[in-house]
Length: 276
Image (cartoon, rainbow, N blue to C red; front, side, top):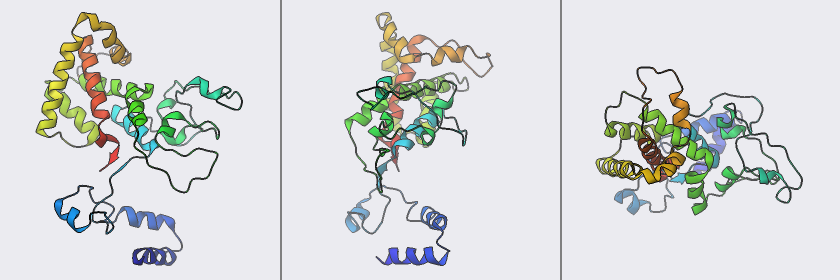
């Protein structure tokens, strides 16, 4: 209560400026703490009522989508403009799912990769990817978002077309970079790109073992169709670019699929979409 009273006084003293309060909170030492629970903190403040650490929580739905796009290099950072129409199942906009037929002209010129903030929203037809991550519907007021952790969310980040495309593009970006001379360097670069930290030795060993197994697996000619499906079209489109000296264009299909699988693993780590 004392903290709330002080914040209320601070708000009044600064001309009712919410921007000042927001800046004050996010730049405070309390807000910038890590969520790591040490034995000392667990004993002194087990329920975190004294704010001895940051609460660990998943990013909001918009943040989850934007993190994948940013890590893969697909994010369109254009600011402002009209709403955009990323890919969505067409049946959502037809009866009986919708009250009446609705137009949804999917963008294909790069606008589909803009931040989730710009996604067009029908009041009666929520965008499914965001809805799976507790983004509010458009037909009711929401003063506080729910925060769930469901298997459907994991299935979304593993299988939804845009998230799969992000994994493919992340693999393309790392493997096509000829400055990396070994698989270990590629793994470290991919890990750092997604999680903004270097992998621990056991994490690196697990990833190294995984990529070797996937390379052997997709090296089987009988799995060529599966490898092509997993690798997608991102590799083909990248090889059509001018052949600069810092790019590889002769990546075998088995390696394409293996590195796409690795990218999916790293992007789908709990740490990727959870605030530290």
